[in-house]
Image 1: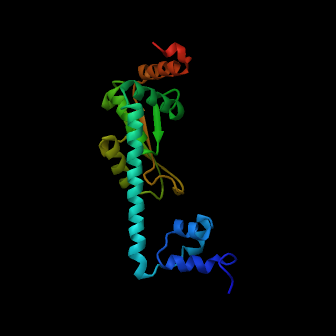
Image 2: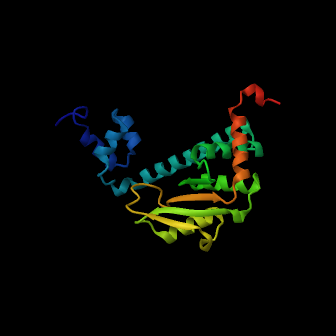
Image 3: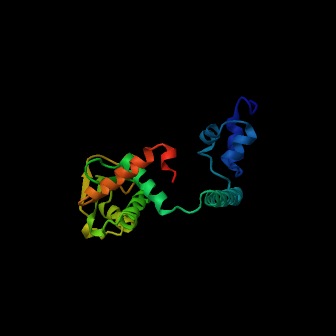
Length: 211
C-alpha cells in the first residue's frame, strides 16, 4: 500500500469519514484546502461522527460572528457613527461610480446599496418620496413576483407603484436572484448640482477642505 504522502486519497477519505473538517484535514496532512475538498467531497461522514462535525461547524460559525462583532466595535471606536456629512460624501461617491451622468438614475443588485442611496435621497437631500421611481431589470428565468416583493420591502414602494419591470432574454447565470433595482429621481436638476458640488469638494486638495 502506498504511503499517505504519495497517495493522500485514502487518508483524506479516512479522516473525512470520521468527521474531520476540510481545514483540519488540510492541516493534518499538509495539503491544500482545495485538494482536501476535491478528494473528500464525496465521502459520507460516518453517522457516529456527524455530531462531532456539526459541533465544530457551529463553533466556527459562532467564532465568525464573534469576530465580526469585535471588528464592528473597533471600527466604531475608531471612526464613531456616520454623520450626515459623511453619508452625503458616501452617496455622492456611489453615484459618481455607478450613477447616470445626465438623468438621475442609480442601479444596483445590492439591496443595502440601494437602501443607503434611497435613505440619503430622502433624509439628506430632501427628495420627496413620490419623486423616486423604482424599476427592475430581471431575466426570463426569474420569478417576477418574488423580485417585486423583495424590492418593494427594501424600498418601501408598493408593488403597483413600480415604474416598470424589464425582462431580459437569457438566464441569470449566477447574478443576484432578485435582479437589478433602479432608482430614478424626477426633476433632478438641483439634485445633480448638489452631487456635482460635493464631488468638487472631494477633488479639492486636502488643505482647501480644512475649515
